Length: 265
Image (cartoon, one colour):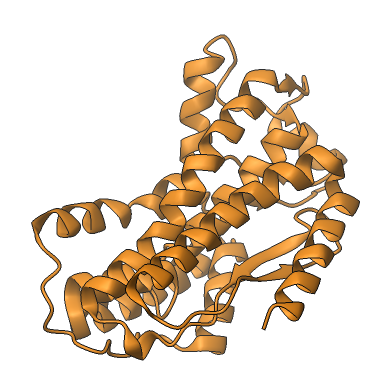
């Protein structure tokens, strides 16, 4: 049970090193490990059978990984336990990702070209709202559409925001799906369907396909609806409801509508 997770961990470290170097690999893996161990340790706390994290190597630029997952017998967890297991991972990951983004923005060197000029030279990584707010705070002298030369911390933070934002979309058995089901029960199925409809409509209107295609791929692999927990009647309490509702805003801050602006020249 430990050999495959260990092999995948080593391969993912290698693939991230190949695409971004040692600093990028260490910073990016720190976020992924924090995220997955948040899930794993919370599952252990509640006695819910769970595997060690399976990291997913992707030895091609720009990310070097597709994140990680944990195999868990979710039917053993009740509503409150599912909420805690689902949300602890993204929170733990963000606690590591935000300081990494901070360093990347603080030390970032402007490319000295506009977005359109940069796109004629290559792909441009579009900043999510959280990173844009950091730029405004740390680098107020820079114009809003500043393009940075990517440093390892900036790139690792961008990758972490993308993966966290996608995970917190309230669909199926994504982390956001766990949270939504704990908050709404079976009504979360309607929320998931609404998200899919909005994503499709956005794709058609804006002609930007990255986010919508990623979401549709998830739906194709694991479906739309979240399965029942071991006991849906267990209350989650007032503060979990408050935190859960607030957490559903994470994709707004962590996902740019079009994360990668592809080369035009």
